[in-house]
Amino acid sequence: MQGGLSGRPLRELSTTLVADMFYLTGGKIVIVGAGGIGNGADCYEKIRAGASLVQLYSMLAYAGPGVVKKCTEELEELLRKDNKGLEDAIGAANEELRTK
Image (cartoon, rainbow, N blue to C red; front, top):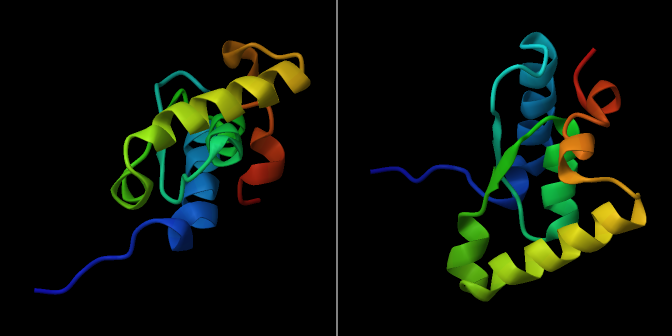
């Protein structure tokens, strides 16, 4: 049995795919951002690309359940810094993050 690719190596590609799907659907469907999320900045990047939800997987295995609280706190700080609510942040950087 062969293993797959997951975690950090997928971050950029998965963010681009989130942005493309948000654009193609006009932001009318819920998109779950996954792939390479290890901190609040990664969460925020997926959200700004168009994700309504984010999924932690590999990082949970490496860092344990405390990573969820860490990511949440960092995300809250980034939203506060940008003076945005979560709803306002979804898709906010879509154009710059999607493939042209």
